[in-house]
Length: 262
Image (cartoon, rainbow, N blue to C red; front, side):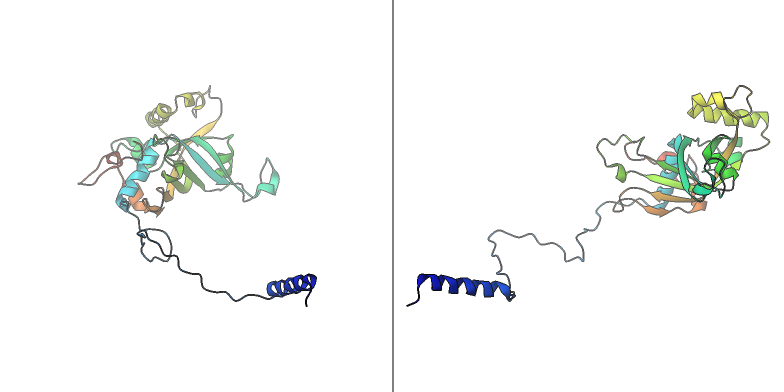
C-alpha cells in the first residue's frame, strides 16, 4: 500500500513535470453571442474614411492669405551664421525663432504699397539690434510662422485642428523711400501696432535704429488642421501671390472665406 506521503510526493512530481515542458496551444472556443453584433468594413487599419468635406486647393490659398491678412504677429526664424559676435561659432547653423510684429499692407491694388511690397509679402520693421535681423544681414534666409491658435474663438476646439502656415523667403530692405511712401508704410504698420511709433526708422527720437523691409515669400507650407478634413501641403507660389482681398472676374478673394470660429 502506498502511504499518503508517497502519493502526495508523486502528485507533486507529476505537476512539476507538467509545468516544465511547453503545452500545446489549443484554439480558443468561440464565444456565442446572443446579441446582434455590429460589423465594420474590412480595412487594413482602423481609420474610417473621412466624412468631412475638404476645402479645394483654391479655397485653401484664400484661407492662407486670410490668415496672413488677420495676423499682426508671427515667429520669424533665421539661422546663426558661422561667426557670431555674441556666442562665437558655437551657434553656427543653429536656427532660432523669435516673435515679432508684422503687417499685411499690400491688399489695396490701387495703393503704392501693393507695388512696393507685392501681394502676400508682409511688411516688417527690422531693428538693427535684433538677433533675427543680424542673422539676415549675415546671409540667413528667413521664415515666418503664423497660426490661428491665438486668434480663434472656437471655444474647446483642439488647437491642433486650427490652421497655421509657414512662409519661407528672404528679407528685402525697402530703400530710398519717398516721403509719401514712407508715410504710407508707417501709417499701415502703426495701424496694427500703435506702440511701434516709438521706434520708427528714420526718426531722431526712435528708441532703436532700424529699417523697413518685406519678407519676399518664395514658398508657403500650409497645415489647415487635421488631415481628414483640411489640406496639408505646399502652396503654389503663383497662386499665393495672385490672391486678392476682393474677388475678381468671378473668383473669390480672401475676404470671401472664413477661418474657424469667425
